[in-house]
Amino acid sequence: MNSSYHLNPAAYTLQQLKDQLLSRTLIPSRKPLTVNINNQFDLLHKAGINTLEDLLTSLKTRKKIEEFSKKSGIDFDYLNLLRREVNSYLPTPILLKEFSGFSAEDLQRLTGIGIKNSRQLFERAGSSTDRLKLAEISGIEINTLNELAGLSDLARIYGVGPAFARILYDSGIHSVCDFRAYTPQQVIDLYEEKANRKADFTLSDLKFSLELIQALDPGPDS
Image (cartoon, rainbow, N blue to C red; front, side, top):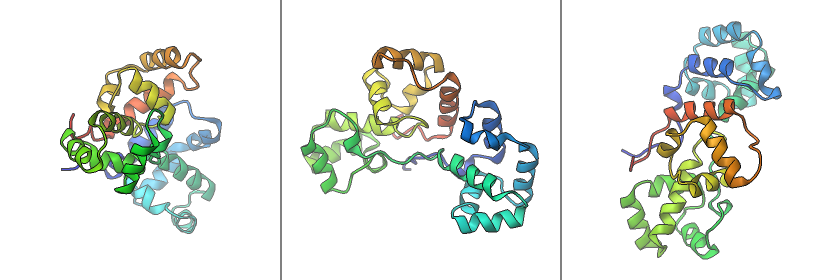
């Protein structure tokens, strides 16, 4: 069975989402989500929303949000903000060219076989066996593919962009499973040492990332 790049939204409950919103230090623009949250989430539940997947389906477009707002009695602006929050749980795949340290020739070879971003690489080269086959097809060194696969796996983590993924990888954290073994403070210390600057994220941010990856498939080789 193939591992999913993102968490399974059908397995992430509305209660989990509510708990996360209440336990985190939200950025100012998202703080309105906690205002009258018990009533808002009661209304969501009464309207048939039980999981992240239900939310994603019901709030997929502006028109759907407008319709759901009328149906549920929840303000449009609240629902629109909630949609942004929920979408952030499913990070946009990163273009492989945004990861530092790889030749344009190797990236072009991958592009030639339909692999341009972290999700495509994760899905086609998630296991060591898959990477060996890909090395034969593409002519790319297996060590290069292993590194790209590790960075692509790390890019599945909430809040991890290409630069952060590189720092993690160069520090010996090569996968989601490796990341799970660290505490939020250890990750901050590691980041500040490698980046030689103060982290622009908090313990609360990392705690959330570590909690959210519990819902991620660990990957074929884990």
